[in-house]
Length: 177
Ligand SMILES: *[C@@H]1O[C@H](CO)[C@@H](O)[C@H](O)[C@H]1NC(C)=O
Ligand SMILES: *[C@@H]1O[C@H](CO)[C@@H](O)[C@H](O)[C@H]1NC(C)=O
Ligand SMILES: *[C@@H]1O[C@H](CO)[C@@H](O)[C@H](O)[C@H]1NC(C)=O
Ligand SMILES: *[C@@H]1O[C@H](CO)[C@@H](O)[C@H](O)[C@H]1NC(C)=O
Ligand SMILES: *[C@@H]1O[C@H](CO)[C@@H](O)[C@H](O)[C@H]1NC(C)=O
Ligand SMILES: [Cu+2]
View (cartoon, rainbow, N blue to C red):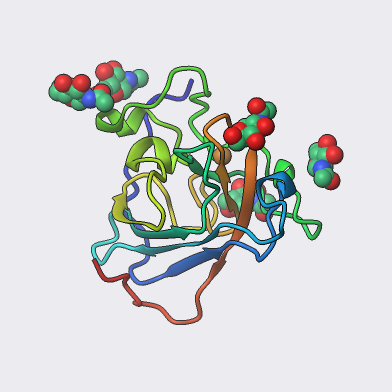
């Protein structure tokens, strides 16, 4: 509705956010014996301020039900850990869910659709590093993700687990490639 996503060019270099998954899954059926996906996302504003450098790491995924999408969601996870309460994907341009996002037309994707733009979790362990052009570390604009969360889903969209982004004290800790 609001057109394509805009590349963010004013990210303060070195400002870093991280989100780590909790010890217990939200979807208890995914881990009947307890436990959870282990995983984290580290996102650091690029040295030139254009986009953010993202590093993701996941392991201990459910044996069935992949490949697993993950996204930045609008709201943080509340105290009770309920991933449903993180609401929908971060989508400041109001793109919507219906047309799947194409990896080589990433400006047309939802800002929060990291798996759509950069690939789903299709191995265990899974690691990826990429530049995300449309997410912002500048508080105050819609594409800001530092006060939000991310959710890992089954391929059928059921929410397995979720974690909140928080700001790292140290700046300039660029994830190594
Ligand atoms: C969005 O980007 C696509 C691909 O470059 C382009 O075809 C389309 O016209 C753009 N839409 C708007 C509203 O600018
Ligand atoms: C989604 O997939 C998981 C894993 O295969 C399965 O356990 C669950 O029942 C499915 N949920 C729905 C709503 O289909
Ligand atoms: C999580 O929140 C949703 C929406 O508020 C609610 O419908 C659901 O019952 C909650 N689930 C759990 C396990 O508390
Ligand atoms: C990406 O672009 C290439 C070349 O235009 C096209 O052949 C391919 O199908 C596109 N891939 C996706 C996933 O849309
Ligand atoms: C997160 O930050 C954005 C941009 O400053 C703001 O619009 C949004 O309301 C904030 N969300 C929460 C849950 O605080
Ligand atoms: Cu999601």
